[in-house]
Amino acid sequence: MSISDNTAHKRFELEVDGHVAFADYRREGNVLHIPHVEAPTALRGTGAAGKLMQGVAEHAREHGLKIHPICGYAAAWLQKHPEFDDLVV
Image (cartoon, rainbow, N blue to C red; front, side, top):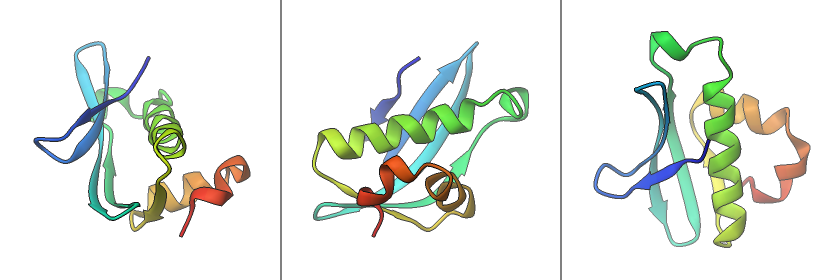
């Protein structure tokens, strides 16, 4: 599974079995502000939101970006994954 950057809607998306988990973002310079992460009911408990956040973090690293996790889920996920500490502002 890989995420896509839906620039028209300013969100990262992960499609699983026809359902889309997404992370809204606002980019300012080299910082991705993540105000909201959501997985549809059908994907809750499947790990889809975690896979989405991992994809967001990997995208940020690849593109030299930092992450400002405004969303509680995004912040909690990043705290549980210290390998991405260098990305958090």
